[in-house]
Length: 397
Image 1 (cartoon, rainbow, N blue to C red):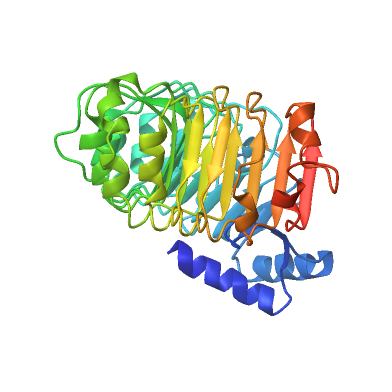
Image 2 (cartoon, rainbow, N blue to C red; image 1 turned 180 degrees about the vertical axis):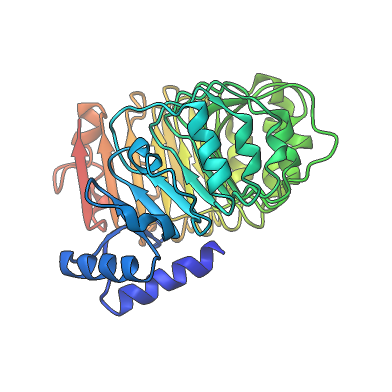
């Protein structure tokens, strides 16, 4: 589904209807834009065929038949219509002005928008998700980012057709146990939310592609749970995984071994892995982005082995306080294009062997000691030969 959407976007770019602003590490589109004249035309055509309406303070009575509504003023303004819209499929909030949703407004949404599939309330105050949400049986995407959500008033598995749940920047501290029973789930977005408690007896969320960002507590979650999510492509783990020591230090590292065919992006923070686990990560055949964030690696020496990370495109190494030496063997990371080294205060020099990574196009050095930076100065630096093939090198504090 996501791949088909990207193909359509690429086709629009090929026709010069959409312009690419920034691409991701793997060449995929990150941000894009369209010309203002084309935007005006698209909005006019979308309004004419009831595909999309934008609520921006102008007249909006035609919205009662729109299939998609983007709110740029307030949800209260839209709801003041009090007209049923059985055609509505998507309701999106794009305003920074604070507002709370009352119980009667939730009733209005559930009673008059029975076919709603996408509901994104980014920034609205929603402290408790009310039971009326269960009536939206066709809902696929529920966006509650930055809403201050504290809890659900019903079992989350009642939303059996859910594909995406975004509760980043909320007050949900633990992932609801029942969420793993939703078979249709594809994307879960949290912010350092805990996976804890007893292991699920049966995991139905086998189609999950994104799990970000979670903290793991309790024995068995790495080996006996994450390893079952064989379609996972993006995994962000934060926290000291002391209870997972045996699994994480095993050269097999079951969770990575199990999801090996699909994982393309991996972020780790505070996990305190050592070199043996790093060797296991090197074997992931489709890994394209690796982020080693604060204290994710606790060894003094890090070695990228020959043939390791065969498809890696972007590597970010950030705040690894204990790292002193880094070595890259010949034919390691053969496709690397971007390297970021940030505030690794004890790292003495650029990795030996980096000169063999001829695909490297961008390198960012941020917050490193003066001695480290001096070693890569053009012509005069003792390590300049390691980086002279890189077209773009940015050094900043």
